Image (cartoon, rainbow, N blue to C red; front, side, top):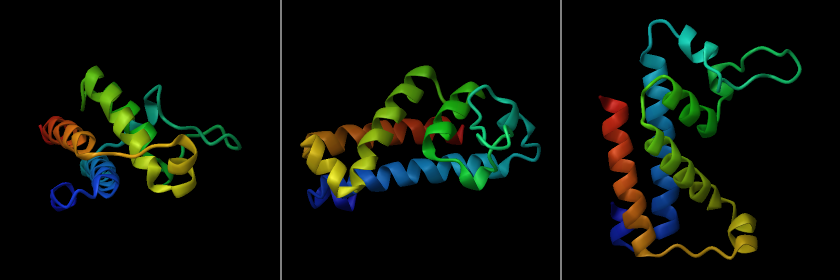
Length: 124
């Protein structure tokens, strides 16, 4: 919220993406039986071993997809989380420059609404 109020819109978006990732990790870590995480269709697979990647190697993309598959978030939640994830990746300056992206207060406010909604879904 401080980044939004300071009009640091890219920073706010990056923080929201990181927060969302932390919520998915916390939800996964809270599971006594993690088997469903590794049996989901969206579980990331190591190309060399053909086995599921260990959780510390997961990125936000599989957490979003597996989270949806396990009913943690709705389909629309998954879809908008993917958009937030994509914009969070503008943390890489060359990507931001080459795509010609400049976020504004309307963008960060919209992403904040999305983040709050996803937070409620993940905490329920």
